[in-house]
Length: 248
Length: 294
Image 1 (spheres, each protein chain N blue to C red):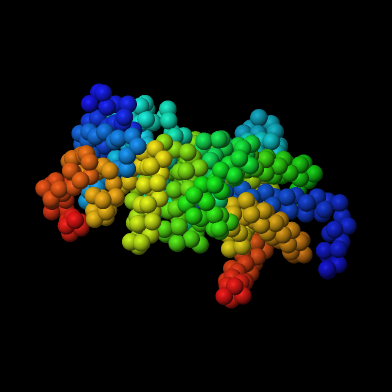
Image 2: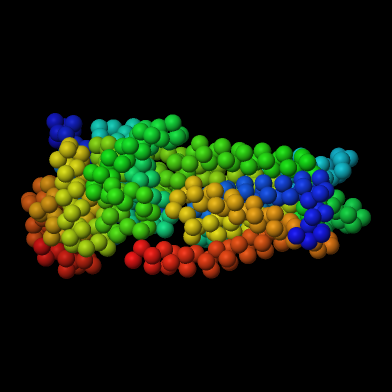
């Protein structure tokens, strides 16, 4: 395990997280491989998003979390975080280009001196995800899939080494999900570590390298094909809501 | 233009009054856009109402040490302390109880304004009824504005323009996607403090013109009226500033036409009229555009 440490983008050891009196994660231990595309899978309320937020240092926890070989605060600019759709105000007066520019600013600085460069790099990132034509449109006028693409463009403009996405496929159709998965695979092929909190078990085995099964702790982790077994899925989903989707 | 209005424009004092309220309206439109987009409008209202106990306390202290009880700098210090205390009370209620934010703000707003009103009555008793002339700060009296108010308001406006231009990208990122902003290590707490500080500066700068009870309306209404017309936060700030200035000038002129009328309510009503017009026209313009495009 120690030999592998340089190859881990995220290493989590004995992670406990509680919201007030309610324990959400207990003793979660997992290593997420650098350069792989990993799905975090589990029933509603299992602690998947909490795991991601703990990695980002956005909530108090006990245990050890190392990101890109050190504490998160040492590498925030290299980590792109895409929150759940519900956490974003889609009616906000902001254009698609300005969304992508947030990524460039995260890397280059926020004080307007880098405006031209940020603008150029964000337009390149938008072209990469096929949104160049929509750059001047308000984000609220885009479809759900296009909005997620804009967020991937933001991660590209940030030149992040690690991209964390919290349920990016919620409320988008199957075709759009497939396109987005292609886009994330492209990102992975360029050497970026991609971690996705994911709901659709049917795509995990074929489209992800690794999977982490979560229910209050890490039930199992490893290569997607090895982990997504009927037995482990039964342990993860058990009698929890969402068991029906475990048929894959 | 009525003779009253023409006469008003010929008078240098009236021109100062109009320039001050126009500058204030523009500055409030800009700072108010941030307050609205960051969903802090009610916090601004709580801060505005909390200035009253601060002002009355500062006035009473000034009287106690032999002052006039209405030195502008004393009142400004009192107002700022009151507003900051108001926001601190909101945060304290939220930490100490499990009440939601809106309830905490409503509690702070009501109780601090009640405290201020009670203090003002007490001061009036002690001072033989004139209360150091602080009542006009509640609903505003633009006739009391002097040159110094114009310079103060202009300084606040310039500071707001400079800070928002400098920090535009950061403020936009925070208001649009707080999680992302925090995830890349941006100081959300400081940026929020800045948004609050700009709101407080405008409330204090505007207390003589619009009064502290209605100050939040001048912050929020122009921003709301601008929203349907703008695709970007920067654009919304410019349109809100123009609408705020227009509403402030119209309200000042209207209040001048009515003897002894407070200015604040007329300015807020004018802004309300602009908001109603904006909300009525915007969907039709949008339909016409989509119709033309189709």
